[in-house]
Length: 514
Ligand SMILES: Nc1ncnc2c1ncn2[C@@H]1O[C@H](COP(=O)(O)OP(=O)(O)OP(=O)(O)O)[C@@H](O)[C@H]1O
Image (cartoon, rainbow, N blue to C red; front, side):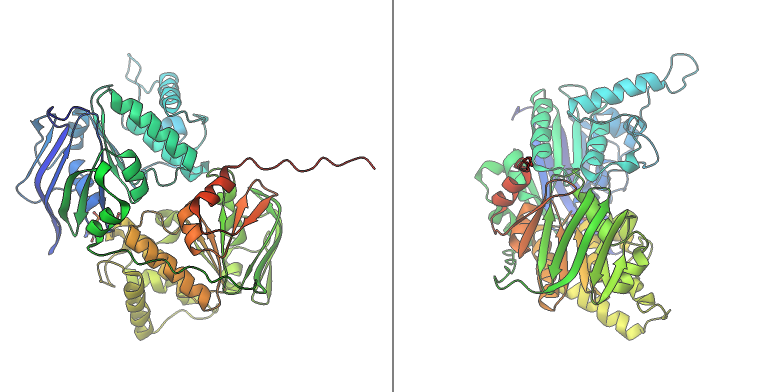
């Protein structure tokens, strides 16, 4: 990294107002060549808005400048101009087209063309895709449809697309919360690869909620709070997670309420003989008031289990007993599971969880409409009370029940999704990656809300790759070692969780001839 060289990116005095709400004010940011610069801030602090101004999605308020390698961009930014200057971006939702293949997705925005007639040159396109995947050491079939991939591989495809046109030594790659779904080894490999790219002089702007990732991998960090820079271009070497969190939130982070060790409660939810994608005869049970974690290597098949158990993906065999009802999973759909008292908080909130064009209040109250199979209306006063309580207890920002969910920041959307399913009073809650894209303060709000739900007698299955969340919030943790093997551990140490996940599964004893 060259400290005195012309900055790769220089942002000064940028503001953004939506209606009467000023969400970015006098934003400043300097990223130098070959630098990994992190941008951090609480949910709703304006990080994505700044990225969207840089990429031309939002026009900034009048005033302010953006320079790339010393050359001023005309505002509002036109994406073609920014891209020609070397800027590429991976947004929070990854921006993939599920019905297209890996190679087609990598080509979007810059397909290889034949010399004559300028048709898409599919053979060259597959070569480009294979090269981009190889540079990330991603073992993926370029012909596989992206919709069939797990989260870690989806992130890999989006990142490969951003890397596609990189000229060694130049350019700026913006990663907006896009490394969240990578597992420990993939994340390490990914950062090794980034380091090689940056050693040539390419810069990276990393928007992340993982302060561990930021302080381990980034060179410098800029901190936003309520749309203003409260820490500019800080050297990560002199920082601690607590100090950065305090700067972000303006206060210390609340502790996550730890589970109290006690006798194992009687099972409130029991899954038996589960067969389907990722499962070949799995059994598991969760007691009333228990938070049970479920984790495994991302992409190993563990990510199918929450959907199989909640009836959202067809199982080949298996039964779920919950609250006195027994659900035959291959025959039951998600509706039968909801009626039995199961609530699923899915990982992909944009696709599976929320109605983006409805308000916060309508999203929270939606599942209530047919809770007992008969009601098609809910009282307005109940809606207002339920929404106000969710906004208060989860700290949803802004405090605006009628705001469209699509206009909320990613982390606040995540909290609305959690509130939506908690509002039905479930007997079993299955949460898949509930703290993705949330800040450290919101993470403790969410995990404490999960704990409170358990304390009121709900059985909770927390499916996550976040070892720290599992260690802090779970009574016990099931580690997935394959479709027919779960190992149970009890620990409050994240490293012990990771060691169990990444340990090679012990070979079962060879049956002896009798
Ligand atoms: N199109 C929009 N219309 C109105 N308000 C918006 C719009 N887009 C974003 N906002 C508001 O701007 C603020 C900043 O949002 P932004 O997405 O930049 O936050 P963020 O720091 O990226 O948060 P997160 O970490 O949760 O993704 C939020 O209060 C959000 O509700």
